[in-house]
Length: 67
Image (cartoon, rainbow, N blue to C red; front, side):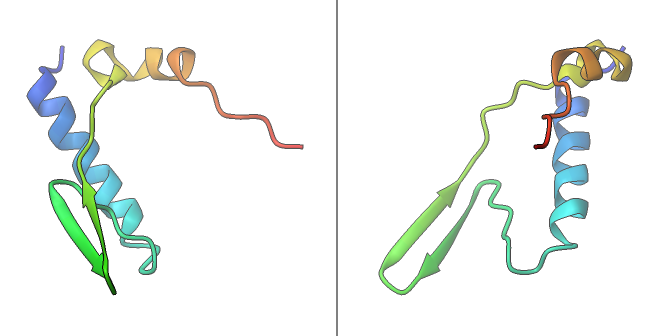
């Protein structure tokens, strides 16, 4: 079973890999982004179902329906 710290690190890594595909969408994890006079601070409150296994992730977070 995955520990919380390992699950968080894996989630951050996966999110960064995904964010790299979209250069105009920054991922702010313990970072700040300044645009003109606005400062955006990024941090995450984690609820990661990976600590209970990948199979349960589908049950906890089903894909949203499109319509």
